[in-house]
Structures are given as structure tokens and as C-alpha cells.
Length: 254
Ligand SMILES: NC(=O)c1ccc[n+]([C@@H]2O[C@H](COP(=O)([O-])OP(=O)(O)OC[C@H]3O[C@@H](n4cnc5c(N)ncnc54)[C@H](OP(=O)(O)O)[C@@H]3O)[C@@H](O)[C@H]2O)c1
Image 1 (tube, rainbow, N blue to C red):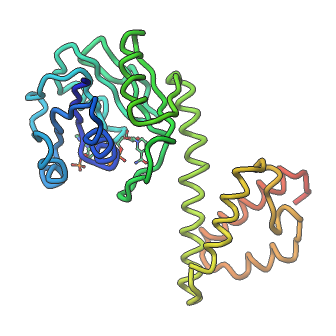
Image 2 (cartoon, rainbow, N blue to C red; image 1 turned 135 degrees about the vertical axis):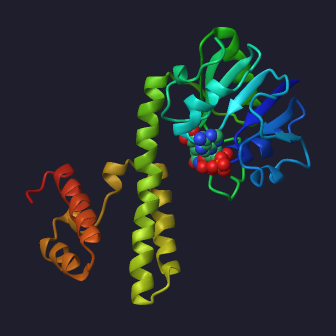
């Protein structure tokens, strides 16, 4: 049985809580966070608390707070010389302190309220200061996922950077598309089959080969017309930067 304390009460803490609490080999001992209202989510099934100096005894302490708070919160807590990990894609393992047994337990997925249907395919990028602790983390990750990788802090940082392009920027493009639809009073839903096809294609084709559109074809008149249609300076800037990047990728002169 692996005894776990979760520190933090946001999206990742909720996801881990949901998958851990139904696993027979994992016991969630406590969830600790500064946000008393958010702790309501957990209190039916485990002990909750807001005092970092009153952590219950556990095998692994998982710090799922925002990146900027990892260092300061880890200094405040006492983990009884147990294993302490964070869940960030971009923070180095040695940003943690308070114990010599440090690690990282990074789920390479996006969490924002709607829980993922299945944790089994979520890649867990793990790292630990010593081999014995690595095995503990690997065992924990394998309870909830079939996709477990040993990734160093440096590689994880680069992977997280790639994930920002693949997910955060793509989502922002959907947002910008939705703004145009709202302004023109056309349903955003009309774009959903296109978004679905884009996703499907990328599962079987390289992103380089999958690219289409006026910038890829170097349809300069369409590119200029689009720029005229856009009203806001920020929209024009994003459109120009991305179009130039596509043209450069395919060797076209601007
Ligand atoms: N969301 C994702 O898609 C995702 C995916 C993989 C990894 N991660 C990583 O997982 C970690 C948590 O992310 P999240 O999405 O769960 O964030 P989140 O939903 O914004 O929750 C952040 C948590 O950190 C707490 N917190 C913030 N500042 C704090 C401080 N100064 N002292 C103490 N607690 C503080 C928040 O408490 P309050 O509610 O009181 O602010 C909240 O409990 C981050 O390292 C993130 O990089 C996130």
C-alpha cells in the first residue's frame, strides 16, 4: 500500500485525487492546501488541512501547487525525510527542499476542470534523486497509467516547451477563431469537424506534411485580404507571425 499526501487543491490535485482514491493499492492519507473552499472537494473521502506544519505521515508527498509557489511551499513543509515530488513540467527537481529524497511526477496532459476520461494513456514523466525512490514513483505511476517515462529535469523542460506549442497555443488559436465567429454571428460549432479532422490527421501524418492553407500555398492575395478583414492589431500580429513562420518553413519568399 502506498500512502500519499497531496499538497495543493487545484486541477492537478483533483485529477490525482480522483484516480488515486479508486485504486486499491493507494491510500490517500490527506490533502493539504491554503484554499479552504477548494478543500471541500476532497473532505468526504480523506482528511484535509491548511496547516503545512501538520502533515500526516506518508510514503510520498505530492506538491501540486503552481510553479511559482513550489520552492516557497516546499520550504514550509516537513515531510519527515519521506519522498517529496512536484508535478510541474518546467521546474527543476532540485527546486524542492526539506528532504534529500526528491522527485518529479509530471503528468503530460492538460487539466482544467473536466476530468480526463482515462488516465491510462497519460504519459507520466518521472525523475528521482535516488534509484529506490524512482522505483516507488514508477510503481505509483504504473497504478494509474501504462505510459511511464524516466525523463531528466532538462528534457522535461524541453518537453513542456513543446507541449505549450502543441496544446496552449493551439487552444489559443481556437479562442481567436471563436472570437471571429462570435463577432460575425456564425456558430463556432461549424469549425468543429475541421478541428476534429486536423487532430485525426496528425495522428497518422507528420505535422510538416499535414499543413495546408494560404501561407503554405503562398496565396499572397488571400493573405492580404485576411489581414484587411482583421480589425485588432493583436489579431494582425498573430496572423502575420504565424503566416511568416509557415512560409519560412516551406521555403517561400515573403
Ligand atoms: N493544469 C495542467 O494542465 C497541468 C498539467 C501538468 C502539470 N501541471 C503542474 O501541476 C501544478 C499545479 O497546477 P494546477 O493546474 O493544478 O494549478 P491550479 O489549478 O492553478 O492550482 C494551483 C494550486 O496551487 C495553490 N497555490 C498557488 N499559489 C500558492 C502559494 N503561494 N502558496 C500555496 N499554495 C499556492 C493554489 O491555491 P489557491 O487555490 O489558494 O490559489 C492551488 O491549490 C503546477 O506545477 C503545474 O505546472 C499542470
